[in-house]
Length: 342
Image (cartoon, rainbow, N blue to C red; front, side, top):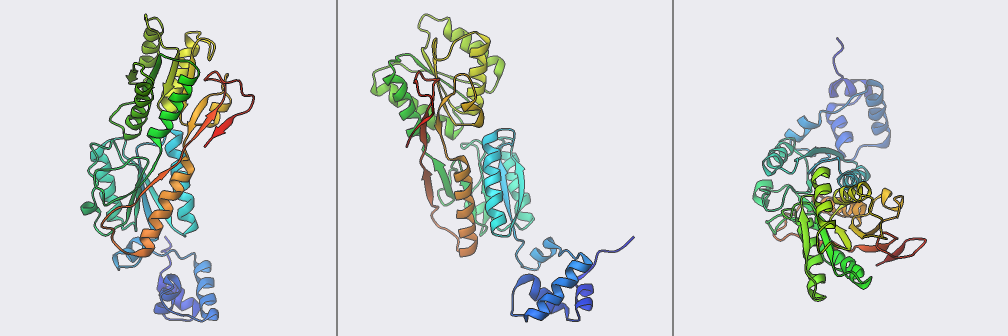
């Protein structure tokens, strides 16, 4: 079996010393253009690949970052991952990606393995915020940026969106349509984003002197269908639903279709999170659009700023990105084309 080519093989073919090959690979010292060309030609001919882990153990840079997400079957997290990976490639870095499955212990273990692989920084969408064990002490000098959800340690950088304000503005829009019984349909309140959106919903109702009506448990299509059916057959049936995210929207909208409810004729629907399908449903969905790809890009860019700076932050930065309201027809608006409100 052929052995993998070594740095010594590259040096021999290029007619230089191994130190010169190392300098070309790492850019640590000036090497003439002709010498660098011979080294790179030898690398290509031999298909030599440096052992990144060994280089990291020698104190050299691994040129990699870690990315930890709750899971990847939600398009929101997948889009975030793509944005982070794109920025990493622009910086010449690779990305080690894994998931926590919304479990704080799994998240901690995966982060520990990332550090053992000598990643130069980590971008993380934390598991359920109140349970996450991520702290600056745990990461030491390794830069970390959390996004979409914060953690309890304020010394870690965080990138968020206007969850509360976006929900507030959308529910106010439903109230302007004349709705007095608006039901919030969401995932667990233990998730930072869902709770923030619920608080925006509740504030809008309180300011209008209306009663809140909420359900948390839309992870299951079957449970969502049962709850929607019960609500619509109650004495004070809602005239509008506000859903907390893409998954809740999918289950609520599917339930309404199953029950033969006409949107917006029988019931209005407004949602937090936009998606490609939101404009293709019948009717198209009115949504709070959050800058999903931009959030991933901003988080990754901030991480690379920290890596380049080499300084450990005592106080984490906090960036909050704006959302926009996209009015389509599910809320009762008659727009033939979407109207975006910034």
